[in-house]
Length: 239
Image 1 (tube, rainbow, N blue to C red):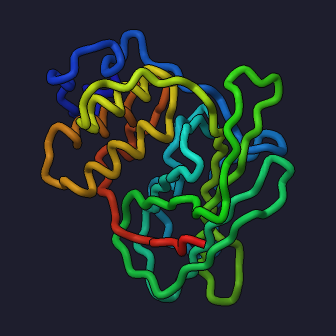
Image 2 (cartoon, rainbow, N blue to C red):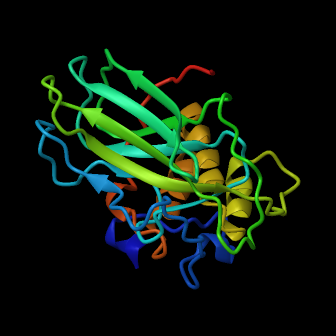
Image 3 (cartoon, one colour):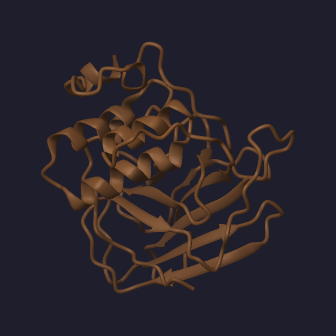
């Protein structure tokens, strides 16, 4: 399996089907509105790397569900961000209108996985999982490496806030909470629960294995970045 291919030890602490790959969990397909757009586009003068910058979403889905009004999204950046680069975080509503845009500069980070939280000035409306035409919002992270204003490197994804009832465990364990989200197909919340817990507890081996397991499911396909570090970066303004 993908877990063996990248040398991940199966999560023996949580042996339920949600943490196994047979059968793998299912996450709904929620690509950004406006047709099938490539979630990745290369930029001018950005460092050439083996992997492109990419959204941390199931590779075949283009996006997914969240139950949060201001969810967090995650992006893998395979090169270091330097003070010479500019980063733009954009959120668009289902009609394609830009409802939030933040520019960040003077950054200095190592390659790895970065998080961006949709600010409180933008509230995703709660919608039904059974909608004939789901209300999918579009988010993107653009890195401008060319000081002359060339094309940015871009990663984007779709996100739908849903009213799905999640059977939460009677525990505060992020492992168990993330597992509940996995069982309900709630991609962004499962990922953020583990990601935030890992940032708070960087030496916790169980959290690391759970993160790697989630990214390596055959229905997710992100085993290539499953062991990449989480990078502290990019605090957005609340408004």
